[in-house]
Structures are given as structure tokens and as C-alpha cells.
Amino acid sequence: MTEVNDLNNIVTNIKQPNKLLDDTFQKKIIKILIEDDQFSKDIIDMLKVEYFDGILPVTIINYIMEYLEKYGSIPNYDTLLDLIHIKESDDSTKNHLIEFIRVTKDYKLADKKHVIFFTKNFCKKQSLKRGLEDAAKAWENEDYEAIHKIVMDSMKIGDTKDRGHNYIDDVEKRLVKSVRNPIPFLDGFDPTIGGGLSSGELGVILAATGGGKSMMLVKGASTALMNGKSVLYYSMELAETVIANRFDSCLTQIKLNAILNFPNHIRDKAKEISDLGGKLIIKEFPTGTATVNTLRSHIKHLEREGFIPDVIFVDYADIMKSTSSFSEKRFALTSIYESLRALAMELMLPIWTASQASRAAINESKFDLKVISESLGKAQTADVIIGIGRSDDDKANKRATLNCLKNRNGEDGMAILLRFDTANIDISVAISDNLSGYEGLGETINNNVEEMLRMQKNLPHFNDDTDNNIMND
Image (tube, rainbow, N blue to C red):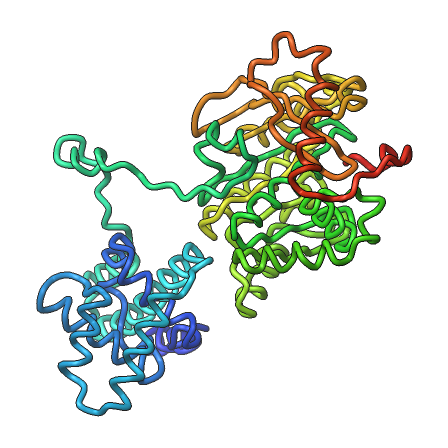
């Protein structure tokens, strides 16, 4: 009897909440349950109505469970609306349920991986708790075989039901063209990487000190912004206002050292971006203090305030802090990059960052992955790596070479000549990606590009000899 009491005490003292967090989280679960067939298969045998709180989510889950029991599948949004109209006689309740479904359907989910993990973990713990309660009763009856079965069955609940891809039976599944929703990064280069980075992918800008890593990140973020995307930009080195001025310069093409002289241009550009649907949050963290968990926490905070990013830029990963302690820096760096890519997969959005190249890349237009500093694990983790090469001659002629060093979405190994003026973060594909014979053409090409941009944008041109003193990285 003492053993039974001990087991009952263990069950009673398990620190496990009885409900699935708040109303917003429960909406997320219902949304994924309806839209994600694999999640519904994995969770449905251990998800209970009593885990939900509030008349609206409880009612919807009841409808889903009843429909599943009757028809063997999860109802879609339209079916749920039909059920509400059929079953609900009170107009007020009916309208509230319809609005609940509408909000759930339209909700922009940024943390799907987290919701799935938390829900499965919660349900597994609840299942184990129930199993231990049943095991206590079996112990009292000295039914030891039943105890073993109860505990083992409780542990198995929630294991994936996915059998894998059957090569013969699943022919049609693999013939369906997968849909990527890439976020634009650089006009003229995006087609090379499948239109840009997509959900769950990690891109890395590789350059030597002063090579333009941060400038390239700002340009990529500006491209996304002008395409109506919500952009989250983390700076681990420079102040938020400094980064914001770089965006001002990049977006207006006014030189950095004169940007504050043209406030109306900045205001007009901000309104234009807002009209396009673009949003930008710039957040600074002191060098060496922010971990991936720090970013995750900040992203959750922004989500609660209604800001859900489409793409994240981290400037830059090499000066972040690892979530674990390592005796060697290379292991810490590998951990940081792996954690960033895991975050991209968890949030189902792309992340761009930058990495320091070794001294071998200094004053070089072209280089390969051998110049990646400290840890080759960075290269193994990334989906796309582009190197920005700038010799002294390139800097004088306001150009750079984009070296596509790794590309999981297409061809790599090519080099593309860029217009690369750090004075106003004027970065664009300058000529064909065949660089042979371009020497000597850079100044002519760049002058033509500069004149064309001035004509198109009708913005002031500055001939200040101090322009080239702007910090390049």
C-alpha cells in the first residue's frame, strides 16, 4: 500500500498545467490542426477537449472531434462554418464562433514549429500522467504486466505516424511541384538562388574586413522592404540609428554623409514603403551578448505586438554568443550557425547573416570557401553562401565581385560583377555574369549606371571628396 501511495504522490506532484496556454495559442493549435495533415495525424489520438479553455475554442474542438469520429478526417474551415450554422441556434454564439474561425484562418503563424513541439510535448506529458494514474491502480491489483503495457503505451502516444515515402505507392506525391515562396534579395541575382531565400533557409554573406558584408545585408533587406515584406534586422555591432541611416541612404540613393540634409526625401520614402506594405524593425544587441535564444525571445515579443517578420537579417552571426560553452571558438561558431538555421526552420522564414573571411580574401575580387574563417561548419549549415570580393582597384572604381560559393537551389561557382558604391549603398548587378574581359570597363559602366540612377530618381548628386571616407563594413 505504501508503494501505491508513493506512486500517487508522484502523479500528484507532476508539474504539468491542465490547459494549453491562452486563447491565442489555442487558435494556433486549431489552425495547424486544420491545415497540417501530418500534425493532425500525430496529435489527434492524444488531444483532448479538456485541454482547451474558453467556450469558443472548446466548441470548435468539439466540432472537429465529432466530425473526425464520424467521417475519419479533420474538417476544413468551410465545413466548420457549415456546422456552426447548422448546430448553433443562438445568433450571438454563432457570430462569435464565425469570427473565431475567421481570425484563426487569417492568423499569420510565425512560430509553427514551436507550437507543434509544445503541443506534442504537453499532450505526451498529460498522457504519461494518465498512464501513471492507471498504473497506480494496476499496482494496487498487483497486475504488473498491465503496468508495463500502460507505461509503454503512454510513452508511445504521439510518435509520428508518417511511414515515410513509398517509392511505388507515392509516385503522384513526388510529381507535384513543390511551392517555394522566396523573399527577393538582389535584382538580377535572385533567379540564381531560386528567386531568393525561402522558408527555413539560411543565407550567408562572406567577405573580408571592410569588404561590405553589412552593406550587402542592408541592400538585401531594402530589396525585401521594397517588395512589401516585413523585415527584422538585428545589429550586433552598430547602433540602431546608424543602421537606419544606411537604410535611408540605400532606399533614397542620397549619400550617407548628406542624408540628414534631406528629411523630406526620407519621409516620402518611408510613406512609399508603408503604402507597399513593407515594415522594418531594427534591433541592436551589444557585441557578444545575444544568443539565438535572445533573438527568439525578441521575436515572440514582437509577435505579441502584432509584428510578424517575413525575413530576418542578422548582422552578423560571427559576433553572437553561443548558447553553450565550447573550449574552441570554431565549435561555438558552428553551434551559432546551426542554431540560426534551426530558428529559420522553426519560424518557417528565411534568415540572412554574414561571416568574416580570412586574410586570404583581403584585396581579392574572387575567392572560394577556403577563405571562410574559424569554422567550416558555417559552410556546411548554410543553404546559400555568397562571397563579396573587392580589391583596391574595385573599391576605387565602385565595383565588387559577387561569388556564388554555395547554392542548394541551383548553380554555384559563378561570379557576377556588381556596381558597389558604399557612399550611398548603391549595389546592383552591373553587367553579365561572365567577368572575363571586364577589366578597364568598370569606371565607364559605373558612370553610366550612376547617371541613369540620377536621371530616374531625380535626386541631388554630391561631389564631396570625403564620400569615400564612409565606413565600408
